[in-house]
Image (cartoon, rainbow, N blue to C red; front, side, top):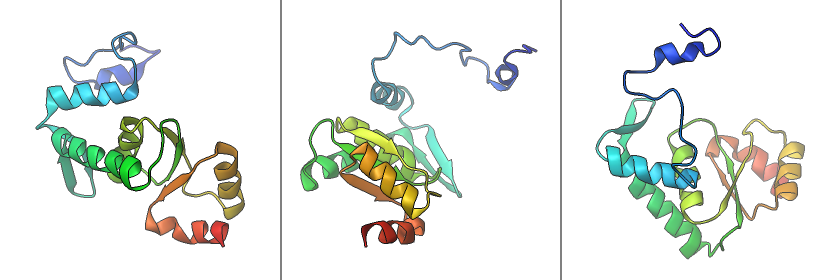
Length: 142
């Protein structure tokens, strides 16, 4: 076992211990490559629901289209994501990136004061939030 990197022992056969950082220019490109290579394989699993890379890609495309078409955001605009680790998070993240926008991660456990500060400081023009945290958002926008 590698004492400096013990997690490597849990990697399945064929998974590289090192990543060639020159292989991809962006995180969005990593996702697109994964979709092309593993389209019908499971991409995400949460609370008994599994979606394939192909399904994730379709949802990512729909969300990116919504951000650009319906909300009319422009390249470089900032989109705050206030959600825990759930199936919606990678869809939102890759949708924002595919649209050419900037992801601003927001801790869903922030207090209203902390949330207000991060939204102002980041310059986010849109906030995507899971309804469980709507009360905090309401206190900020009231």
